[in-house]
Length: 243
Length: 308
Image (cartoon, rainbow over all chains, first blue to last red; front, side, top):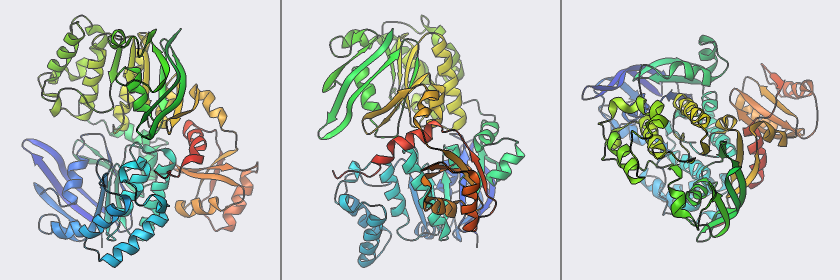
């Protein structure tokens, strides 16, 4: 079964076509990089795939569920984290895990097991009862990822998860991504760091609402005859927009 | 002549030490970068230098004005673009620019020459409200507003955070042409690849400065032999290399891993080790360290959060 399938998925806001007939598939356990310039339509596409926004036309299924009729099922079967909001700053680390565990409908015994596991893995035992606000950003993001994985989702959507994070923690974060993918979780990730685009199995680049290119990083570099994903991005991403 | 002199400056918020004992100097006409992740203390430092916060201790001089004693005079001589978009969302592009010009006792016409190259890019939308602009347009408008009173020193706090790679490149081109006009620019960024575009940089982490130098010379701090390594299974390659006795550190770097060694060995020694762990399609080459290698080496001791 494919983790994500879209067919001419489109979203219009008035006259403006934010996402323009995008068609692609993501394999189970794949790390799929969803790239594009600011305003290219990535967020709109992701919101539709997460069941938060009804498409104008086209089809899509996420984790086997339809984005028009089964949005609640989608929400139960995906994880989501973004740079902007993930955890409650004024709850402690332990409280955040418990809160999200409850939201995802886990039983208390499960939540307690998961909490111990996460705290140990991230080496946060000593600060478990400190406010989440006191954690450095990179640690918050690793915790947010672990929380987004609490209910063992089939697909996890990561919207710029590493923006502003220090270079070591950024790499530790990607090792968590690799590990989750190796256990079969599908990763759908956006980033502005072009070195991170190289870590994906396949990468799509959106320009003006359309998917302009989709291939492995190696394939894209060969097609556009450059030696880095930054080179590919510089060639493709500007599009026709004057902004 | 130095445009900015920071002398042993510190600032705490309650028991959080945001900036501790920071000293550095920025020369007139220099494009100087503060490089560091979120939480390094960059924003607090900026706010002190543009007189929005007083330091707890230490002193600083910007454009020959003391940031505490001469703060009112100094305010007319610096331009500041905060990391968070801080223009009036319900004013149009043109109204915002006119407002900032008026507040500083000047007009758009008087200093139009300085902002022209940037402003023409957003001028077609000048009657649009700032709150309705795209990220890239907001950034350009904020830069125009920070320049409209013709400051001597320009402070840009993370102007490219969350901005795509193409727009980031355009923004740095704009900074380069502002520098050519003689403006001193202090810019902060969490993107290590932008460090190479500055004349000199300071690497910052946890409220402290780790090193100050030109981008070329700062990489000389990195003394270990460094190799770029690639094989078919990246994740397993990281694990296996970390377990090797010759490894000091191993991190992903785009398509390759960067492997820093404890002691000098040859690439064929590394290849032999990897072949014995059944790795395929092995590619190993010696590389020069970049700023990101250097930064990671300097911060590697401090990566576990303290009890708060």
